[in-house]
Structure formats: structure tokens, C-alpha cells
Figure 1 (tube, one colour):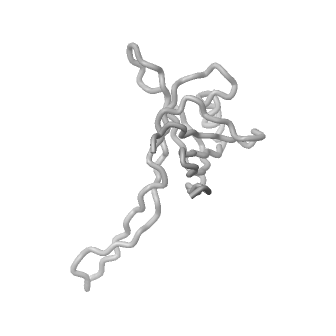
Figure 2: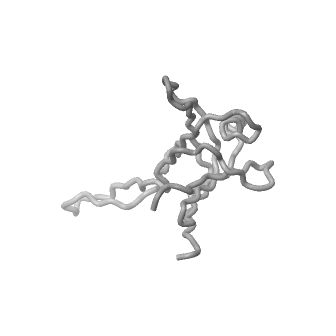
Figure 3: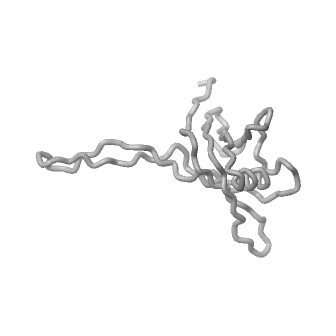
Length: 138
């Protein structure tokens, strides 16, 4: 499956409906790996583990910079981060799989180089689990 038609929506508490985040060019690994808890005791010959908590990290997403509109992702995410506002995000894959999570975004402008597009990275301090929804058509 190609990444074409992958998109992200976001919704602030003041929004009536989700808004498509324009300019998305890179998303992080989703869900997160589980930490492994060492449960080895003196009777074991090998180290034993139990799966612990998932750690999805801060979910850095990269966007093409655009601050020309009130709902531009750069402006919305930067302002939400400055105000500690929680935003709901939904990442949708082309097959209909979705990843839904909420958190407080932080924004940074990426390196700016000659003859290249300006981008920014949005990281999210999670305030919810990452909920995976499988597509209905399979």
C-alpha cells in the first residue's frame, strides 16, 4: 500500500468538526513498543520478561510550513501548545485504519536550507492512549 491518501485531522474543543491538517509530509511510528519488565528470579537460567507499558514517544509529525490562514496547522498547533490546550488527532491510512489520540502539541521550525521547502515539526505530549480502529471493509 502506498502512503498516498494518508491524512491527519485535528479537533480543538472549540471546533464543530475535525479539520484536515494540510501539508503533512511525515508521521512517526504509531502505537509504540512495549517496555520489557525483567521478572527473572534465581530459579531461571535465562532472563525472563513481561511486557510493560507501551511508549509511543512524542509522535513527531512533519509539515510544510504555512501560516497564512487561521486554521493553518502551524498556527493552530503553536497556539494550542502555548495555551496547554489538548487537541484530538486522527491519523487515517488509505485502507481506512485510524489512530486516534489526544495531547498538547509543541511546534518547532526545522532547519531552513537553500532551495528547499520550509517545514515544521509538531510533537505531541500524549494525554490519551493511541486507539487503533481497523477498517470496516475488510
